[in-house]
Image 1 (cartoon, rainbow, N blue to C red):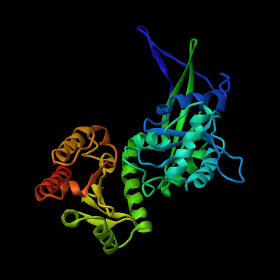
Image 2: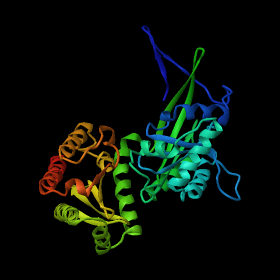
Image 3: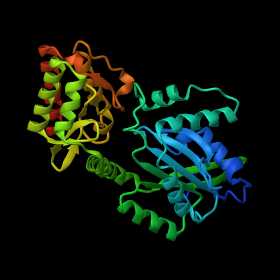
Image 4: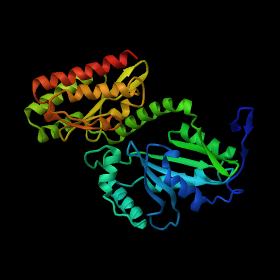
Amino acid sequence: MALYEVSTEALDQVTKTSFAKEGIRERQDLQRLLLGRIDAIDPNLFVLAEEFGDWNESLRRIDILALDRGANLVVIELKRTQDGGYLELQALRYAAMVSTMTFEQACHTLERYRAQAGTEVDAESEILGFLEWDEPNEDEFGNDTRIILASEDFSKEVTSTVLWLNDSGLEIRCLRLTPYRLAERLLVDVQQIIPLPESQEYQVRVRDKSELQRRASREKVSLSEIWKELERNCGPDELEAAREIQGWLERNGTLFTTRDGFACAIQHEGVDHYPLKVRMRGEIRFWFQYLANKPPFSDEKLRLELLDRLNAIPGIEIGRDRIAGKPKIELSAISEPQARKSFLSTLDWILETVQKT
């Protein structure tokens, strides 16, 4: 598609150029500039490092390594070429190599990256703040590795491979960076071409469901084992709260277990909604993050209303900045009968709101 400048007389076409023609280098210019505005690639990314290569017996380096809001690692590979080179093959190799990174290793990576720029950082606090976590959680960290490819353009071989890999369950995005010359100014149009933005919401739904099912299948323990741990970690009133939540989940959705607790999917017209998980350490993780990915709770106003309903329960206090994360609620906060009743009423409201969609 062409780009035009609007004047009072006409639409004047802006001249398309190339990074090579403009003398834009790959690492020294393009990568440096994108690091300064990572939101041009994705507004929900946190940069851990550039030129990351912390592995043995390899000189290969990831252009940009980042985290997303779901605590997934994101491998970003850049090219200034018009065919994308072999970006997808490089990125797959890097994604496999970095996929075992732990939360602790991510903190060390960020510390080294900032130290190279002469900056001291409390890496754990910064990462926890970005993820909206209260404490490190290795079970929730790095469960998936995403890939973002950014290039002036892509060959058919690259796009065909990416489409096939996405159909096979990976998550790879292609961003086309198109430079334009407007008088003395150089402009860059950033467009996501795979997946098409119109289809991304649907793909997010499918991916969330697949991710939870895959993790549940790989990591799950039996419900009886979860209850043994709950009984070790909780008092009688907290256990009663967990039992009532389990009963509600079983009545209104499909209960499943994970490595550290139990959760459920609320189904409505073929769409799964995931409200919360009860962890065997004696806490609830309220899954605003998953609710936010699809209607009706993709509407921020509804998530804020949900937040207000939860915060109206004595003992629960969740910040307004947590409506895209997985805030923690201690079971002890709903150990009193009236608090439990109010909490279950909030779950009823979630169900009614979903069913009205």
